[in-house]
Length: 526
Image 1 (tube, rainbow, N blue to C red):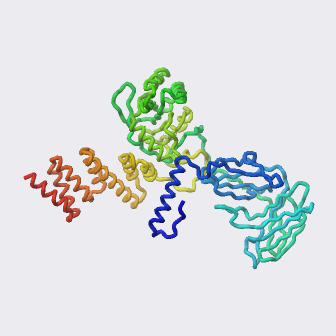
Image 2 (cartoon, helix red, strand yellow):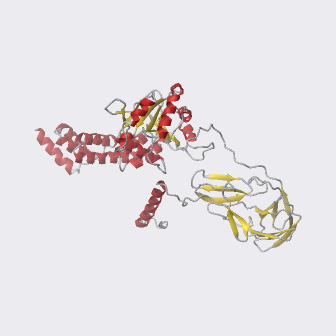
Image 3 (cartoon, rainbow, N blue to C red):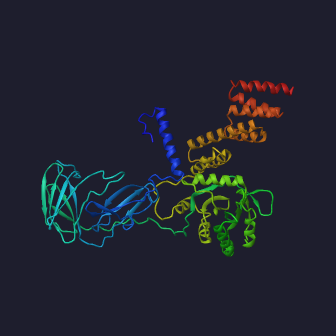
């Protein structure tokens, strides 16, 4: 990609850089890997310039997109442990070395003198062993990308040997030698001083600050960090011809999309039939919607046959093609790597029909009933459930307004009306005056563009609705009032058109179009 621009007033360079990042993110979100789909690797030196891949033997062969690695004896047991930092979750891993051999190492922590730097960076250490072999190390800083290993200098010692002496060259050139070193110990050394044995470290493992029950896991489960409304969602109930929407109820609602020819769907629906009493006792409604009519050449009768054969006791129907498209874009906004739109796929809604969990693939009754208990949970509780492990957050929760705006973005290019619905939801709970004003501008401008588009297509009723929404958000939009007045005048609604033209001129006395149209409307009323 292009290098980071050094002059942010150079619009071409800034645009090139921004476009490059946009292309990278598009590629990553389509499934491409930042690291070439390579798992982490660790290699064992077998001697003679040869190495063996020991990644999985050592427990290091993760699919994490690794970025940084720090080495330290974290638990103080004399062997080196690893902290790994990743771009992907989990962002931080502790790889603890549980080597069974004791007293096979010695470690030193240095402090420089007046003419050396305090941390003794650059000091060179030579440890001589009883068998005559020598081990050399240099104390360094900045040991890796985004990481810094411990400044303890750690020497592993071969079985059958023991430390004999340490020769130390300080950064200022002063040389010192030390004796009486014992394997398995840790020492502090200050320049010009003596060896100071350090007491064994207490075990310093990281523990979760708080715990919560872990839900039965499903590879496709995602609990949202807050509740969001569905985009426009309609379906045709079984035995009916007209589509209907999802209305607010007294119980949470589980919607599963299925196909009559899908084996996993069949197994899922049969499990729901067997667990009917548990589901009803938990206060949960279920709605099964077929997608078979969305696919050309599929068996459109298979879904009905499956519902009948399984004696499915809950409502069923067929999702409309437009609602299926809306759902695809919703998933696109929620997943960095949107999977193909395959069934079964399910949605869990609260009593107000706000979405708070999604399941891709077959889902068990146990998992659904675990999650439905959180239909009235707070956003903080949902946030805890949205990650598959316990712990403490160090970031602030995403505000409902921010979540709604995030979801709105993918809709704007293809379904702008749905994107604007989410922006309205965001505007209902802005967390600052600046945010409110920005959302109002986006909404007003978006509805104004839709009004123009519908007007140009001849959809006068829709255009009028969008003009009204535009002006409800921004009553001071003189141009929108002028265009709305023109639409009303062309429909023969001269009184209403006159009101719009006069208000447009109050806002902008120099609006010549509004002035001309006002004159025409007045003459037609005489």
